[in-house]
Image 1 (cartoon, rainbow, N blue to C red):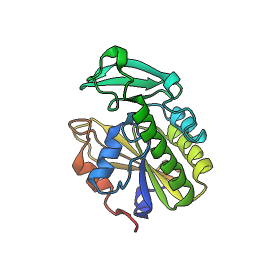
Image 2: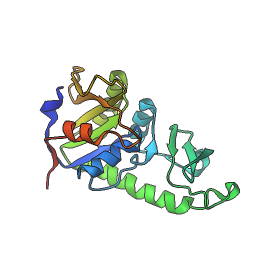
Image 3: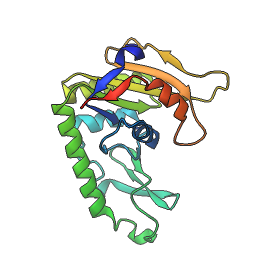
Length: 209
């Protein structure tokens, strides 16, 4: 469907990744009123996110699935090998590599709360707006199918793809998918993305009371 036809009021805007940029921009635009289970992770593979939605997050970030991958900005990078999703912000390097998992119990409690809130929100509220960056049409179809099985209530899926072309600004696309709209915007200077572009494309979207 066309992007302009998605504008309106929604009960919630929910990030489906791929990076932290999505949650950051929704928060900056005052469209994010609670934390979701995928807000601050790297979830590069839409197929795995679809699998995660279908399983209702079963086994997500379970201790036996976690693998230490490296470090970044004073945090350990930890991968969930069942879904290929990585944490960059939950395990601080104040702990040595042997005891990197010390914060896990608190982290897991937080995740359980977010997952429970997410499933309840998706199944009991409408309309909802899901947002994900860096996703192809085929991947969007996979996510839409999983969301349809989970939500069974009206929703929209917005796909925001990022480009590096200097002479190109914002391009609204029509993939011909019933509940999915897509747009391509400038990449921005860092992980946060282009505030100007995000403000433009999300004009006309708002939270309902």
